[in-house]
Structure formats: C-alpha cells, structure tokens
Image 1: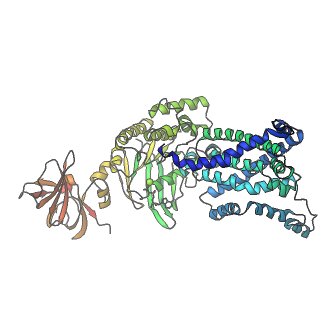
Image 2 (image 1 turned 90 degrees about the horizontal axis):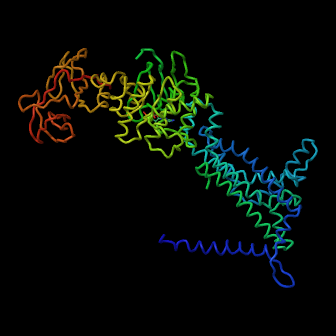
Image 3 (image 1 turned 90 degrees about the vertical axis):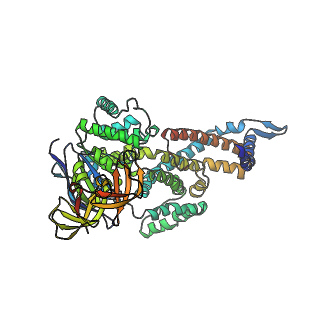
Length: 274
Length: 347
Ligand SMILES: Nc1ncnc2c1ncn2[C@@H]1O[C@H](COP(=O)(O)OP(=O)(O)O)[C@@H](O)[C@H]1O
Ligand SMILES: [Mg+2]
C-alpha cells in the first residue's frame, strides 16, 4: 500500500492512548514499591484468588449472564415485531427503543432510583393502593433491572438489523415447502438471525460484566461487582497494582469470550451490527 | 395428456391499495399441462402465480384445486411447489440440505431422503454438489437447485416465476430444453411465468397472454401466433404491422388506400378495425406488379433475413424478407388474404 502514511495519525493515536496505557497497567500489575525500591511481584494476581474476590468475579459473571438472558428473551421478540412488515407502528416503536440511548447513561440510571426508592413513585402507588411498601432498591433484582434497561437496545438492534435483511422470499420458500410458522422460525429465521444474536449477546454481556455505575447506584454498594472493585482500587484505596491486575484479568476474560464468539460468528457467516 | 382439470381460477380479481392489478381472471389448467402466463412486465403474472401458491389472497374470486375451494388454504398445506424468481435458496444450508428441506418437514426416513436427493441431483445435472454451499454456485446451478428443491416433493403442480430470467442467453436456451424434458419425464403440471414470447412459444402446451391484469387470449402457441385475437396479442407475440383499416363488406377490407381481399366477416359495414400483418407476410415484388407501391426507407441485415422499412401511402411497413431491396428503390407490395388478420378495435 502506497498510501500507508494515511494510517500514521491512527498509529500515533493507538500508541499514545492505547498501547502506552496498556503497558502501564501491565507494569503496575507486576511491581510493588518496597524499601529497596521497585521490585517485580505477582502478589497482586495472587491476591485475586482469595475467595472474596473470586466471589466478586463470579457474581459479576452471574448477574451479567442473567441480564443477558433476560435481554435476549425480551429483545428477540421485540426485534421480530420491529422487523415485521405488517406492524403499523414500527417506526414509533423503533424510536422508543433508540431514544433512551440518546439520554445520558447516568441520568437514565438515576431515573430508576427515583422510581424504586422507599418513597419513590412505585412505592407511593403501592401504598396508595393500601399495600405494604416493598424493598425495590439495593438488591440483585434492582441491579439486573438496571442492566436490562440500559443494555436492551444493544440486544434489539443487532438482531433487528439481521432480521430485516432476511429475504422475504426465503421465508415464503420455506412455507411453500410445507413449513408452518413454527417450523419456519425454527429452521430458517432463527438460524439466519444467529449472527445478530451473537453480537447482541456480546454487546450486552461485555458492558454488563464490567459495569460499576449500575451496581453502585441501584445495588447501593452492597453488590460489589468486578467493576466496582477496580474502581475502588484506583479511586479510594489507591492500590493501583491490585487494580491493574484486576483489569488485566478482566481483559483476558473478555478477549477469551470474544474469541469464542467470533469463531462462532464466522461459522455462521453473515454480519451482525459490526 | 389427460384432460383432467387440476386448477381453476374463478373470477379472480386483486387490488393492491385500491390499484386494480388483476381483473376477473378465469382460467383452468389441466393435469400434466405446460401452461405459460405471458405478458409484459407489471401485467400481473407474478400476482396470479402467488395467488395459486397461496402467498396472496385474491380480493374477490376463488381458487379451486381438483374442484375443491382452496382460496383460504395456507401455502404450506397446498400440493403446489414454487420455483421463485430469485431462487430463494436457504443460505445457511448446503445443496443437499436445501433439497431435503421439504422431505425433512414431512419427517421422511433419512435414508429415503438421501436417495431422493441424489436422484434429484442427477436429474438436474448436479451430481456431486451435495455439500457445496449455495452461494458458491453459479446462477444456473442455483436455479437448478431451486428446481430440484421443489420437484423432490413430487408436487402435483410446479409454479415457476421467470426461472430463467437471470441467466444469459445460451444458458437460458439450454435450460428451456432441460425444463421441458423434466416436465415430460415427471408428468407434472407446470405453470410458467415469462415475459419472453419466444420462450413461451417454444415450451408451452398452452399460453395465457395477459395485459394490465386482463387475460387477452388463451390458446396453443400455434393458435396464438397465427390467430391473435387482438392487436395487443399480435404485437406482443412477435413483431407485427398494426394498421387502421375499414371493413368495407364481408371479406373486403380497405387500408393503405387499397381494398384487400380477406377471410374475415361479420363486421358492421364500414366498421373501423385493426389490421395485423406479420412482417414476413408482406411480400415485396417488382415495381408495377404489386397491389400497392412503396419506397424502401432502410435495410438491416438480421442474419437469416433482411429487415426493411417500406413507406407506402403514409404507412411504414415492417418487412422481413430473404431478398434485399436497395434503399430508395420503388417496390410493389402484395399481401395475401390468408395473411391479413382483422381485429375489432378495443376502444
Ligand atoms: N405487494 C404489492 N403491493 C402493491 N402493489 C403490488 C404488489 N405486488 C405487485 N404489485 C403491483 O401489481 C402489478 C402487477 O405486478 P406483478 O404481478 O408482479 O407483475 P408481473 O409479474 O407481470 O411483472 C404491478 O403494477 C405491481 O407494481
Ligand atoms: Mg413478475
């Protein structure tokens, strides 16, 4: 390629803002400052294997998994409705799915706070009906709700974009060959939508595993997730070494699952949102 | 060929958003017949086919299958299979899986399916293509997979929507012959849609000529070519000279300021009519020996014949002849009674 120089700014950018910080994180994760100065150590990584931190990781993976499954179960039918030709109000519906994404992430999550609070909108309504108030906030349910609410569009849109690309005549061909609507879905629509499902899962699961805002606001700090743990190391306890080690572990986990996903996507061909 | 009727359309009309697309279609199709729906693009051929396949409901009218009303029967319950215009193969399945789709749904024995798929691949000349992915195939091959996928279900009726439209000329000619052979061999009713009159003439037992959602004529290729019912059919089936004429009396028509003998009768005296003459039926003779005279405007060599435009009394005659007359020469024109087709004016 002769026009290689066009790539230079990007290369500089990559080096300055991605490669160097990454190196720094790796550096911090394997050193500690002692009286003798800076020495190499693996103790940050070792520390991660204490049960309490393993629990945090497992909880993060678990809550993200639950949220992803719920997003899939809600998002797939929604994407199908959006993609169906006959549905009259689909433009409005599509807008309703997308509009929350234009709003600030924090704002959206704070909104749930006022809804779920002890004296919030929902509880006021419940007590108005004469029922006892409920603990809606600061539990796993609230965290999962926050994740589902925030990440649902990232499930719907890739599936939607794959579904609308399915040629109508392929579905008619299946009907022509004797498939009723259930069989058409099982044998044609669903298999063809898998690339969208895979990228939807990726796009929901990744941010859900690493989120710290949702768990802090809606979990009330009682549900420390891996994201909160990392945040704490850098902002409050000042243990950059441990924080860096945690970040690296997280990154390796994500890379690992992305590799599995992309392999699966390649087998199925066709494109998702990316 | 038996005369047993298999499909009948009764007073079928279809409107899309208040736009009429099919107008009172009445048509019956016999078992083992090769029927072609022929007409210009947008005349409602595909819509007619989709109504037979069950993908479109007629606005009014009925579809009968062996005398039974199937108007409300969904596509997957009809004993009809379709070869779609753009093949519509399943992109996530290989060739064998595509062909086996219908049989798998019927939960047929796996070994039997394999055998049938193999037979089909032989029939369409795709032996050894079982495990190929469909998008690695050429247009002609995809098209044959689509035909195999439909035929393997042994339908009573096969619907084909311009199946050769995307193929180049040579491949198309080859596939026309193959399709006709398959139809004869399997004894299946074919309902074939095309806008190519030559294709229709070579392949069909019966041609249904359509225009603007109305059936213009139903008949054998020979009938339709030789006895077009109106000016539209005459024009659409091969090139024609269509001229305004006046029926002077029975067996006498006047056009180009000359009274020609013809074989038609039963018109009002002096009724205005369309006169249709095929280019090959306009005979050029030496000056002075013709019924009328004209001047040659242009000559084109077309391989087998010459195509000439001859101007005479304000009419430009399209003439096909194996003999060439030079441009600007004056020639005589003869038209035999047999070759003059009189059509009632449609308006
Ligand atoms: N689903 C549809 N909605 C609206 N108009 C349609 C639809 N399908 C076909 N038409 C119209 O009906 C007419 C006939 O179409 P079609 O049957 O596809 O013609 P052909 O196959 O002879 O080219 C065309 O004018 C087309 O625009
Ligand atoms: Mg068509």
